Structure formats: C-alpha cells, structure tokens
Length: 308
Ligand code: NAP
Image (cartoon, rainbow, N blue to C red; front, side):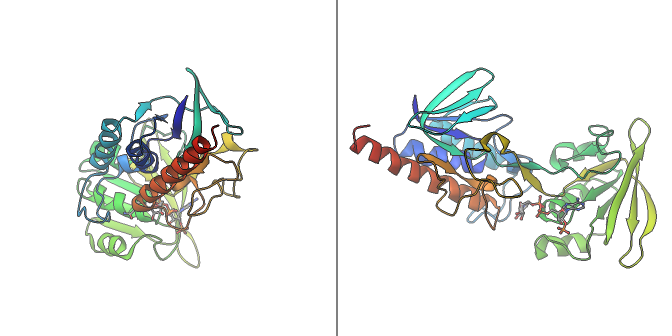
C-alpha cells in the first residue's frame, strides 16, 4: 500500500506528485494515456508565470521528469473502478488493484464532441481534435476549426502558420477566449472568421472534402466551404462516471470541491480541471496539485499521530 494514489498524470496530478514526494510520501500515479494531459497537445504556453514561452509537450515532459526523479511511480493503466470509502482506498485497473491511504483525483477533462453529422464518420480521416498533433498533415491546405475559446484561437493561429487558409467557425459574434489571442486571430491574413455560424455537416468521400455551415446573425444562410480538415475545439467534458454514488458531481459532471480540494470522504481530494472551478488554466491546475498533496500529507500525519 502506498501513501498517495494519484489518478491522472496531467499538470494537477504531476504537481501533486512533486509536492507529495518532496514531503517524503510514497506515490503512484495512474495514467490512461500519455503524460501531460491536455497541455501536452498545446503548441505554445505563453501565460505560465516566469516562463515566457514553452511548448506544451516540453512543459509536460519537464514536469513528468521532475516527479519521476523525486520518486513518483507512473503506471500507464486506466482506472476502471474506485473504492474510496474507508482507511484503505482501492483503485482497480485491467491489470490489478492499487491500494493507498489517500487518493488525489486529477483525471482532467477530455475534448467535447461537436455532435455534427459527419463528425464520427470522418474522425481520423480529416476530423481532428488536436491541431498540434495533426496540423502538419494539412500544410498548404484549407482547413476549418470550430469553436470560440482559447483552444480554438490558439489552434487557429498554430494552423495558420502552415495552412493556406484557416476558416474559424464560431457560433457567436464574440470570442470566449482571451482578447490577445482573439486580436491576433482577427489580424492574421489567412484566418477567415465565420461569426454566428454553426456546422450543419462535414462532408467528403474517403476523406473530408468540405464543411457546410449555416451562417448569419439574423437569418442563417447555407455556406459550403471546401476544406481538407476540420479541427474541433468546442470545450471539454470531465470523465467522472466511475465516482458517481461516492462523490458529488455537478450537472456538467465535474466533481464538486472548493479551493481546498477536499471532498466529503476523508483522505480523498480533487485537483485540476476535473473539479468545479472558475478558471481552468495550467497555473490553477498546478496550484490545485500542491493544495491537494499538502492536504493529503496533513491527513496522513493525523493518521500516524493517532496510531492508525
Ligand atoms: P471553452 O473555453 O469552454 O470554449 C469552448 C468554445 O466552444 C466556446 O466558444 C463555445 O461557444 C464553443 N462551443 C461549445 N459547444 C459548442 C457547440 N456544440 N457548437 C459550437 N460551438 C460550441 O473551451 P476551450 O477553448 O477548450 O478551453 C478550455 C479551458 O482551457 C478554458 O478555461 C480556457 O481558458 C483554457 N485554455 C487556456 C489557454 C490559455 O490560456 N492559453 C489555452 C487553451 C485553453 P460559446 O462561446 O458560444 O459558449
């Protein structure tokens, strides 16, 4: 049995691992995909204090190496079932069961699907959820990106470096993302912004060939845009079904916890994008990791003091 089990090797989980290891605890991190979570597929990070610019992949790898060097063990296994009540917490993966005195849930969130006709059909054949991963396939081509948040804006700017034209399709007349990114997208010559536009369908034969949108503020007109790729960046959704019945989830599926990262179960903490919070940023995920690890460490100290 280890002191602290952490679900998720993204910024929150790995920051928790750094703090927990430095406090002298044994730590296992369980990760279902690659280390770094969403930030690993972010082209550039430019808003992390004291780091003017770093690629998301480098940020993720630096944090992973720091946690591993301090003694955190990262296992690449998905958690399928969790037993959180009681003094011994159990996490079940296809390969077995992990036992810990405490659990920090830092499983992040995944890209939301758009739900448009053609999206499923052309997934991996022109429809992508990761511009940094797949953008290079569209050098010199016309592409579309759907969304109006920071991810869509950053991805549009990234794609514009290589693609002939980037059609940015947003359902409203103003962006949700930061002004600095919105201004950069608006002033980029090869980004065409389609405000007040919704995707009607994604079309093609073997590969994506066009995206059809309904465009216009008052009256929507159909517009067919020939593109080779459609990138979807319409937000994220958490994956917390396995905690239902044990922890409180809000209507959108986020785990309910405050800035202290505490849950109603002693020894169980929630950190990063998976919890209810106002601002989902790298810096706030890392901060949560630290807060959760210190809370777990304090709880372990009280267990030891009481002899349990
Ligand atoms: P987001 O901020 O939730 O934005 C999602 C966008 O998709 C919104 O513009 C939304 O439109 C649109 N959308 C949602 N559902 C849609 C649908 N069914 N059809 C069409 N459009 C739809 O998500 P995000 O951009 O992935 O960012 C997630 C979090 O990470 C945010 O907190 C963001 O600030 C953060 N982030 C930060 C940075 C950075 O600071 N550099 C970079 C990337 C991400 P509406 O605006 O109309 O709701």
